[in-house]
Amino acid sequence: MADPNKVDPIHQFQISKIVSFGDGGFAFTNSALFMALAVGLIIAFLLLSTSRRGIVPNRVQLISEMLYEFVANMVRNSAGTAGMKFFPFVFSLFMFVLVANMFGMIPFFFTVTSHIIITFALALLVFAVVIIYGFWHNGPKFLKLFVPSGVPAYVLPIVVPIEVVSFLSRPISLSVRLFANILAGHITLKVFAGFIVTLGGLGFLGWLGALLPLAMTVAITALEFLVAALQAYVFAVLTSMYINDAIHPSH
Image (tube, rainbow, N blue to C red; front, top):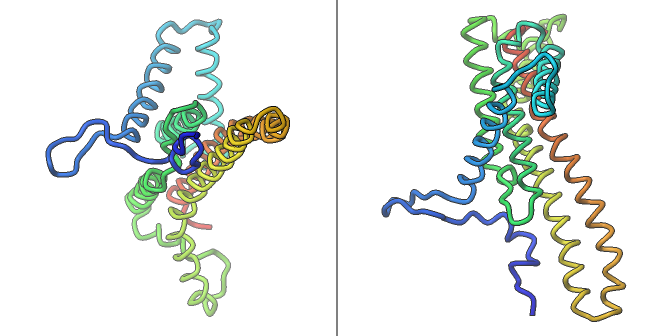
């Protein structure tokens, strides 16, 4: 009989303790481990790619420069040249989400971004930066974000609450979008992989029947790599757009 943990599509998201600290419930978990690995890999890659810079870049330096230009152009297009002061922040978020998503594509690795608490924490960080900088840079004028220009005064009592609710819902939509896409994709992939294991246990005819789930698993795996990269881009570009609101609150 197959191990239920190997075919259960939810088991892959279970958080488990690696090291416990005392009786207070504090522990170093698999989620913390893979977040640390993601950060460590990013730091190691950037140090390696910039340690021996040359006019003619090697492959590692070329990848690093392409990532730099990709995120830099994203920030400039979304928040203007004034938004480049936030480039390190946006670049860090993009790289972390990208590497964490790619880690999730490796068998037996933990998918950090499949947990809403992680994506929501990242979204709250983004909006803390937006709100703090918005008021620090603009003062009370930051509230113009909720008053679209050109709207008649008699319509403002309706429009302003809508704008406020829309702004407050952004952390939810930003976090849920990333979490839901990664979670749904990994569950779907696990389900089709489970079909292969189940049908394979039925003998020769079962393996023939498993060819379709196998083809679907390969196709979904390729799609998931695309989604992993795309979701990192979406998270970063939306962050840049929200930062633009802090820099230029007037519509």
